[in-house]
Image (tube, rainbow, N blue to C red; front, side):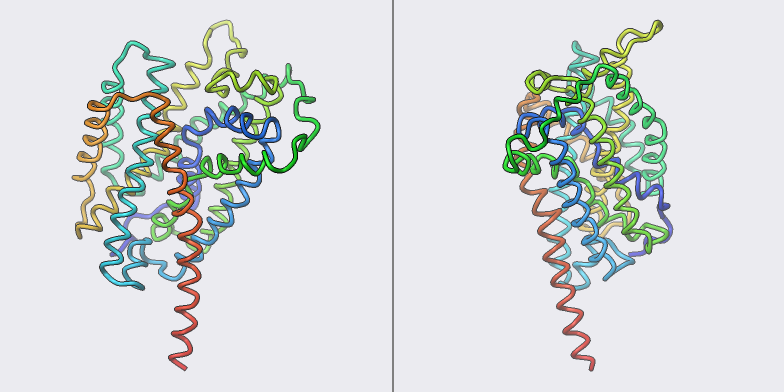
Length: 365
């Protein structure tokens, strides 16, 4: 399978990975960290970034063994056709599952904050239309979209500096007030927040400058860390340690204190823009799902699978009423699966490829 016709630039590669990582986790992250580690949760973020960066670099080392193909092509090449099909099937289930969780969460946020009288199914149906128009295209279009959304929305981060004028920095002290155990417990939450770098398994063959893949994924992880740290530290210093746990989405509530003469509720404007940010998580995951499906069935065109995927989500929501609690339960179910696929799988595959390459060189000698 050749991927040279549809390529992504270095910047698009960074923004695609960063976009998948930011997602909906940002809205609830400060509260989740405060519940587990108090105001020391920002330390858990740095540890989670370190683990995610190491795992990301391992993924790049794996893909260097088969630079002109995706992870499915690599597994097919080294382990055989049937192993490749099994891998494609697993990736379909994984990305469809995680993508659907985020897709439904996106609809729930819109319903709760903006369109409280609108049925969730109608909201998701409306979201499905632009989603189909983007996913049916190639990875280049998706990369351009991620790049556009980043530059359209990054300025919103500066509004989070406004609450610092009423910040109480003493909330952060003393550092490690309860020891390392709460901090390490919260690392699990941060690891899931950094989820998304595994998309590099599928982006690598499309990258124009493959020698920059490692530095690109490092920049993407670091950019995500900066966004998470800014929002988390602002929330920790603005709210008291007990107060922050009372807000389900403290990231949105923070913007209520920002006022303009011509605008009352800035948080609604923020959420309207943030829909685009969430879409940079959903769309790449759905794209990888249908891309893997096309490889599983040996087809070149993935566009016909997009409709079936979106219809499946609509049917699922129609028959099973959705709520934040149900969505959170599904997220908790997906966390151990993500850890296996993002951390254990790349490490085991990397070790296997190293041993395979060494034995092959010995055989040649």
